Length: 254
Image (cartoon, rainbow, N blue to C red; front, side, top):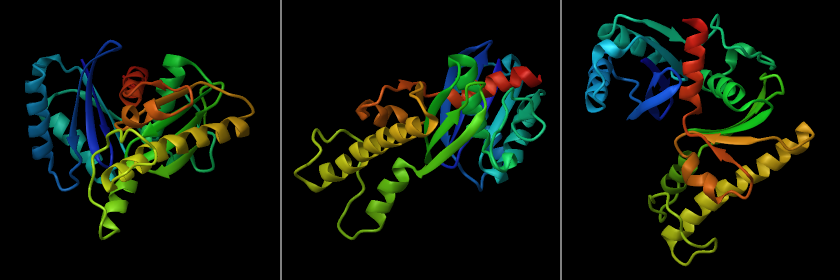
């Protein structure tokens, strides 16, 4: 089994692959103050919950957008398992070219999305990654990274709405039932859910116009399933594109 780890600003997502099959996933809160011993303990607990024996892990691969945690997570994995740990970054084979001004600044999660979309679904495509930030990633017809639009994420907007106002409460992300709602909580839910869905629809349309044609659209990330079902665009949901991209990258570099 290959252990794939996606370190994001809000959550760390773990996945275990046997060949190309994702056999388990787990999600914990990102803690930038956590030590390698603390993360090792969390990994051990996750594996115990999913009944994964220690000797089943043959290798590991990490994608990180939180630099202080990258080496800590690698050390934590090495502390538990005597395996090769690959970190997505410069010098790692991905099979895709980065067509942008400064390739070294492209996030590892974005690269993983491109790798997975190209190898699993084919190219070109547009990937909507809905995590801490919402990203629209253009994958060119040869699997190249052509650029990205980065938008404040769903929870960033919702938290800013509550924290920045005196009378608006914290709310959960549930369907309010109508766009123009009748009470404060449903009004906020409407704005966040339908507002983000409409924004994604609009950005997809603008992306198609700029690209010159309509192309397949895939959605991934922790909040994708909550928002995408309210979009009017045709979008294929695959919540684990980053983990799948990590597995592909591991096999290219192992």
